[in-house]
Image 1: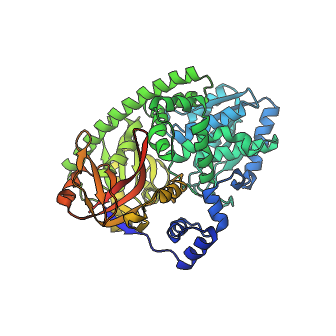
Image 2: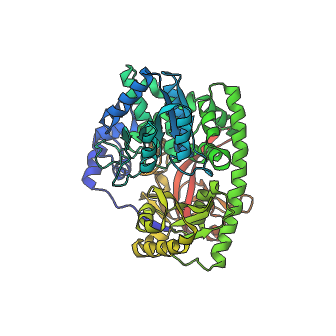
Image 3: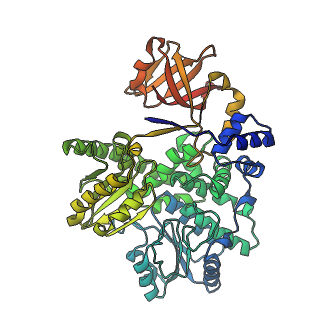
Length: 562
């Protein structure tokens, strides 16, 4: 681990904010590090309001999209809501379709089959629309690069509205409307929405036509918050507002499908981390193992008993997914060692038998061992398909773009992408990808970084500080949980390894003459020798609360010790 202490922000800004908010300068420093510099920004940060959301009509083509949908409703046209099979796509389809069904009965949904059709808009999906007399397709979380597909639909007199958040190419599809805040010609004030977020802006605009307020659309925000967490988009600006209110819905009155998932996991209150690691993988498991339709069925079901049945099925898919990704990860790690590729700048592995639905998860697992841009390939029809994952600070999408001559298609984000290529191009692509990454990655990026907000002493860790830090939630990219470092701390002698394979570390630590604080270090079990015999060590950690026997105490969640 590479520990990096964030630079101290401008002291004048810190002083001004401290005085304006009447808060300790330490809290003001943490806020300025997060881009909060004045009273209004602090109000938006600590007290998100629905009024902070932008007018949806600021998004380019929103007027065209609404006009086309209204025309379809007036003319009793059949509308097909089409979306990707991951969490962002299935939540977006559930959101837009369930809203449109309150206006028109002529609404159906379509999720492409991961194995038969692959990612994004498919010719098979367009044929389905044609065969079933759909004259309008609303594509969510996909479509920004589907030029040939939209042309094919146009030949069949089927219109497209594209709602996407991926980076567009120079040429856009010939659709009726393209809603994508990342369009270079779109001046929408916030361009980090997820696909479901763009879908929400669409129903917000449709709602304005019906004299609905944003508050009337609150019940849809459980879906948006789930997608924000799952798609790892920045939790700033509009995303912070949507996540804040979405979590309120999840914890008070979620839709039956999400309620059924929460019942399975038996947790009282969920934060964004729970959404990312508990709810999202279960929704994702449907598309990974069986079909994304199962996720949409769950998320649009209004009978709780039926939703519980759907949730139980999805839980079984999730168990199968866990077994698969564990086995494939073992095989992939063995392949890296057998080919002596541990010292390369990239990790690229292939096995035609690997399950396409879990290769993205496996790529993330491999990064935990070999911290470098990673691609996991498997066979898909007569081509090879891969999922890409990257390391902090490195844009894997740009690297793929530089190797695009070897690819059939690719798409995605800075940190996650997907691609297909012909088998005969695999080795040339692998060589090119290694060459591009080697030439463009900074050596520091190959070592995992812990970004530390500040160095503090234990006497600064008080219930008041914990309460204030809780108000920094929801945490996520560009507003990560604050990380602190304290040097020369000692375990009181109660330190031990815990977990099935002694993989975790449990300590009770003191600093100078402070009272002791409990500490837990997940995955740090092997570092117990650094803490024995009351030897002093340095710790990087987040401040947490531990609830045990109805008692709540402050606890350090260790990130690393040295």
